[in-house]
Length: 103
Image 1 (cartoon, rainbow, N blue to C red):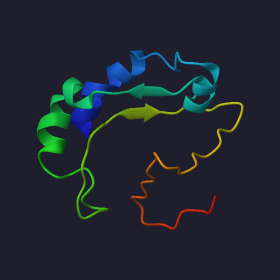
Image 2: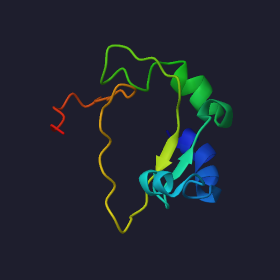
Image 3: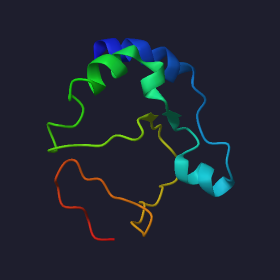
């Protein structure tokens, strides 16, 4: 993790906060939230040490299939963001195995 953080900390620090989409998307994504995508391209440590050696999720699950990876840095905000509602096109991931609250 130290090597990964060393590679990514400067990118996270300089990354613009927020979302440039419509207002509803900005409110839901967080105006102060940073989302850094393409970790495979940005971090040699992520590519060669984390993905290749099953260190990401196997402590909390039997298997995983990664199709996207990103760093999400969330800052305090003035208003609460409603919890996402599972629907026909969404999947809820619960890696902690703790029961999810009813919505």
